[in-house]
Image: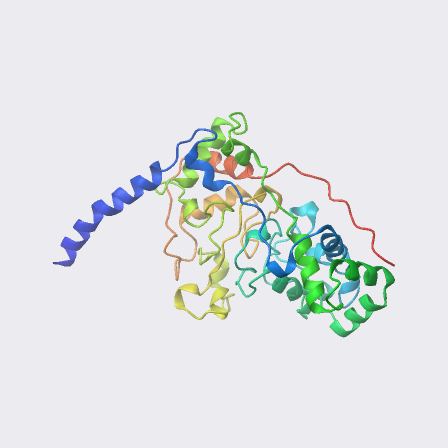
Length: 344
């Protein structure tokens, strides 16, 4: 069979596939076709089943700046509930306020993540919890000093004994406690969630139209990466950001898995509570969701090594506005975060 004949033979299959994708949803609140967007119960490892003592201990550790090398940074410094559990900066700031190369990702719904960090170098929340502490450019913790502090503090001694009676105070119990608290930072009650579950008034017509653009492979095609139910595929993609053209660009996932397609590829972030965690992208280069949409409409600024999922889009102004409105409807109602009383 000639190559041209093969292409002609496959073309109807491609068109048919797109038609199936475009028609797999019935855009009516509560319809069965939408149920895959409902988040399941929060998963956890068998050796770190959550309970209130573990969550309370993890919360204290998450907000305690004394864990850092200088005693002035906590996990919450970069993952602040006031900024959508990020920090509101284009890229994070670490030890002695040095500017880091990547944005601080949100902690929201990381409980559902199969792989963590922009480059995927962490496999679990327990593994990830120690990463910023260990990093010299981030919290710069001295673990001997840190563990000594926890073992000498009566409040922490009691809290660790209650939460993890069979573990000594150390890296393992520290990581498990922080991870237990992070698993409580969940967004699953957005207008979109309520609409999917049957509330007809939860979404406006404009927001529903935005969802249609979002899932349509011939329009936004956003769902190809931002998949159900957590609006991420836990995959890595080079989306053609301008920073990839730098003389020494951040290679992202490629540094840990040297496959050509992963050069400049970064983890797909969840879109849940997205309106609270601007700016966007791993380099913080998009200030608004409208700017994010415009980037995808162009198909990326730097075309070298683009993800196969990237393509330029044809969206009207009305469709772009609807898409932004839909993404804003992915945020759950804000709830106050009560700070813990730290043991002195």
